[in-house]
Image 1 (cartoon, rainbow over the protein chains, first blue to last red):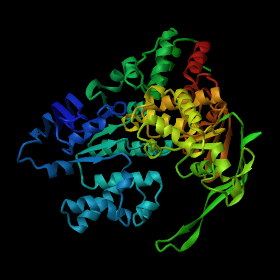
Image 2 (image 1 turned 60 degrees about the horizontal axis):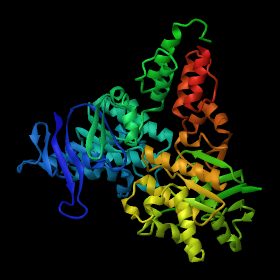
Image 3 (image 1 turned 120 degrees about the horizontal axis):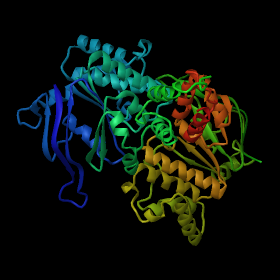
Image 4 (image 1 turned 45 degrees about the horizontal axis):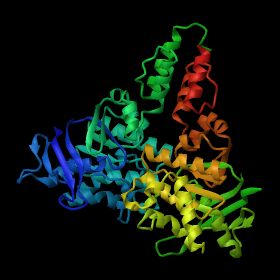
Length: 288
Length: 283
């Protein structure tokens, strides 16, 4: 129950003037149930990478195994793979098209061959999972707010009951509250269903807060792979490739440089606050 | 004098059903008063649908008010005679760089605006060079825009606006589609423009970190301005901001968390140096 990449290479337009190697010898395994973040600057290969995970783009060389089976085998059921590995693109609300939200969310399961009753059941479950209010089920998707549209679009993928959910910058363009709501909902979904979640994000703070593991892409290669604490420890290298650590990590490093006895690896506000309080606790009189 | 001055600004539009019949009106802007002094840097925050983009579109007469008045550099935007003057005074940069670039070569794209204004050729080239230099993109002048990163494209879009020499530049979520590096590049370019060219800057954004350097911040909700002050004043009111679906910079949040846990850290900390300094004092 996992996705494994073995030495995956991908070359765009081979043999032409536009030839470009978008992925270089990428290998990793994502076990079932993990919450993985993928970070990297624009053009680092993140989007190409996730499109490999459900067979949308075929590797130029290398193997991809889903649940132990090579997805490039001739008799491999690609259709089944695509319904089990759900991909939510950037700005997915541009893909909404039906007359009302419920019909739109039914589109996926309908194509999977489910009966109308089953489609509606799946669609309702999916909308509930993303916290979409029932009073808008019969509303045109085009009349919704940005955040609600985004939820409806994510529900459209969830209605196909995927085991793996891949999201390409699901919070781009949303206001801070909308961003937190979507990510909290995805976190809850992950916790309650044990679904594997792969989150592509430009926000280091968000990644640090939600994921178990971070894969850093740079120029088509896997540059770092580890827990948020491990990865953000390399903040200087991250800066060189257009990324950064969460702001609090920098605060912790500054504090350490000023002689505070803190572990500088904190990556979230809670971790940082715990560390700072620990450093202060020893000293009398500092607490107000 | 104020570069932007609005009095009791109202913008209403018709709500229509599927057949196109009017079924009511929506008030996107509801009695807004705003003053932006010349040469200042003003940030506008607000959730999706709060009316901030509608307000921005009033600043160069893409929209004209249905009630109240908007003056741009003293010109009433409702006056059809002033339309082109208003548009030349306030240049706009939008969210998606791909929708704003039309040239096949960077320098041609930047020259498009002044060419349309009837600027003489020598002067166009001078302006192209100067504006590309001011956003740090001069070495890409011969490049094809589609080979650039998002941040670079957005800086070209800004150069295109600057080449028309507006007194004021309105940026509507210019960094929403960019990676962290792209965001930094764009914000640095904007801050530099303001310092060197004394251009008035109005920045609309969802990223709290980008407004720290602003002179004043306006927060919008349901077509109203609900908070107004310096970044420090605004970010000291964490709970109020959150009630408008906004956030505070992560450093401010950490300071707030530490205060809740009993450390005597001052309110409204914006930058990490300030927090480190405050903690050093407490030690």
